[in-house]
Image (cartoon, rainbow, N blue to C red):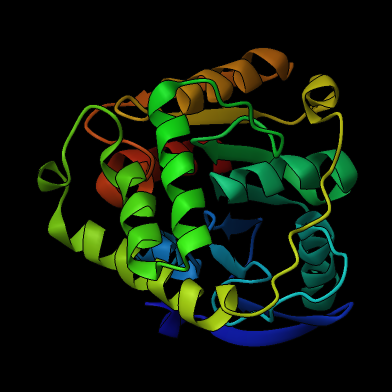
Length: 270
C-alpha cells in the first residue's frame, strides 16, 4: 500500500531516514510507528487517507528501511529533518507506542511542526511501568536477549497484540502475521547490529502541560493498565486533551479496529 506514496531518503547525522509521502495539498498527516515495527503497520490508514490527504510515513532509525544508528540521535530531531527535507508545514501527528512518544517529543522540542496529536497506547517517551503483566513481558524480553533467542523475543513481543486479557487465538491472524513479519525484519536487519538507543527527551510529563495543540489519547480497552493509564494521564495533563477508548483491541487499535481509529484521525485532522 505504500506504493501509493513516493519513497525518499533523508540524510540525518550519522545515518539516513526513509520517508514516504504523496503530493496531496493540505495539512500533512504524519504517521509514526511503534517500536520494533515499521511504516507497514499503517497500511489501513494509507488506504483510508492517501487519496484525500497529504500522508507522510517515517521509518524510525533502527527500523524498516532507515539506517541503524551508531552515534547519538533523537527520534524527534530526525522527524524535524524530514520536515525540512520535504518542506512540510505544521502537521497532525499520529503515533503509536514509541511513535506516540516521538510525536509528543516533537510537540515539546519542535512545537512549530505540530498542529495536533493523536497518540495511542502511550503517554510520553518516558513511560512508567508497574503492572505485573507488562513487567513479565519485559522480563521475558530480557531473558531472550541474554540467551540470544530471537524466536523467544518475538513471542514475547507479540504478547502486546493480545494484551493481558486475551490469548493470541483471540487476535485476527492477519494482524498477528503482519506484526510478526515487521518485528522479525527489525530483528534481522537492525537488532543484530550494534544498535544505539535514542537519546531521551527529559521532563516530558512535566512539560506536557505546555502542549497547546489538541491532544487525542487513544487506548484499546484490552491493552495493559499501564498503557491505558499513561494515555489517560497525558490527555488530562495537556490543556486541550481528550481520551478515546476503543473496545475490542489491545495495543494496536489502528490494525485491529481501523475504521474506528481512522474516524478519530479524520475528526482530529478536520
